[in-house]
Length: 164
Image (cartoon, rainbow, N blue to C red; front, side, top):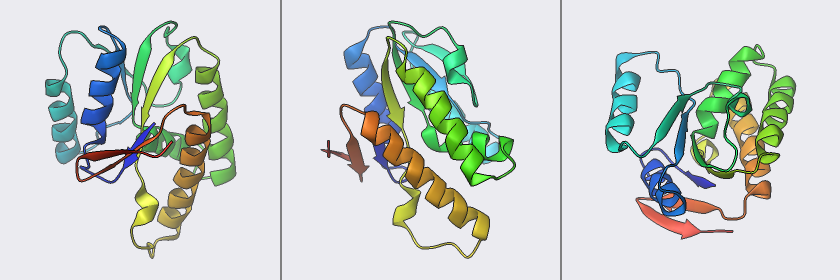
């Protein structure tokens, strides 16, 4: 698991990690770019990866894909949970249950996973109730992923710190 703030270097670190583990890793992109700025971010991520990557775009049901015996980078848990949250009509209890179910399906595979996520709860508290609810929800999801992870890294200003 690789966590940290925006633009902290999480994805680049996770990509290097996956390439150390496999010469043919899988990249699962969970984002649905909905505006031009986000499409540009996605394009920069895509340009950084070479032909050695197998790319999959999946917003919710990652375990539906054939991933056995591979090294799989999931970028990122935050967007994956966002998709689940809106799929569940912003019901936090249903969202965390669905996330855990989907995550457990992945953990049942004979696969090495590298999960990228964000620490959005380190900033200020939002005035928006839905944003507060999602921040709490992501905190729960991150704890669940970290509990199952062999290694957890925190990226701060491009510097990786192993915390588990």
